[in-house]
Structure formats: structure tokens, C-alpha cells
Length: 163
Image (cartoon, rainbow, N blue to C red):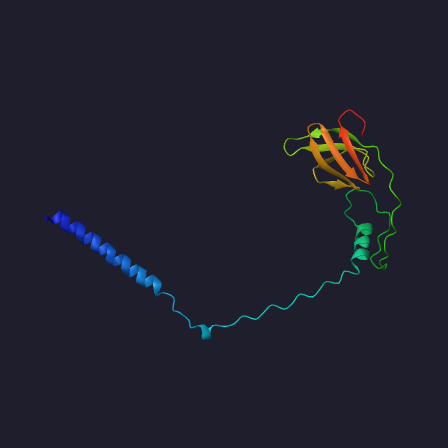
């Protein structure tokens, strides 16, 4: 055996001893704690059911007095923070609007410009799933738009009347 082979054998032996030392050090680095000395964690407190009796009245008050209205028109009710909340009067049945598709905008995902939505003067840009004034855009397929709401489903095609 020449010196080169002896040097290689010594290097492999040193690597094995260092690896075994690393494994032993890793295994004994964290001391084992006997099971009886471990702390038991306390159980979380049970969650009480929420009181939802006043949510309807609070939601109606927020909707009627909302200073950041999407329509950008004055509120129907005058703002008075000291006035007690009164439940909203149910709105009368809405008439079926005459909707029309002005066009499609963008690329995937597509947006539709719909005209004739109640409470809006101009066309409204809607994505699939958006809802405005009770009218919801369900899906866009080619040049056809499916809109639902107010107990009706419309099939809109650009340049044609609603079906």
C-alpha cells in the first residue's frame, strides 16, 4: 500500500468518525423530559353563541345613512347620529328593467358593459359574479351575457333586445 492509498483511507476514517460524532451530538442535543414533568395545557373557553337580534336593524341604519354611497347621490334620509335606529320599510316590488348589453371589455377575465340597471344613468361595467341594484352578472359566453336578478334571468347579446 502506498502513501496515497493510506491518505485516502485515513480521510474516509476521519469522515466516518466525524459523521458518527455529529449524529451522537444531534441525538443528545435536546434532553428528554419525562412525561410526568410536562405541563398540561388548559382547554380553550367555549365560544358563546352570538346575539344576532339587532343585526337587521343595524344593517338597515348603516345602509340608509351610508356617507360613502356607491351611487354618489344624496341619501334619501337626512344624517342625524342622535336619531334612534328605525327598521327600514320594505321596498315595493321592483319593476323589470329593460337591460341591454353595450359591449364586452378586456380580455380574460371579460367584463360586460350593461345599460338600464335601476338607479344608474349610464352603463355599468360588471365582472362575472358582480351584483348592482339586485342585478347579478352570472356568466359570459362568447358575445352572450347571462344576467339574473329581480326574479328574472336575461340573456343579453350586443345589438339585440334582451330575451
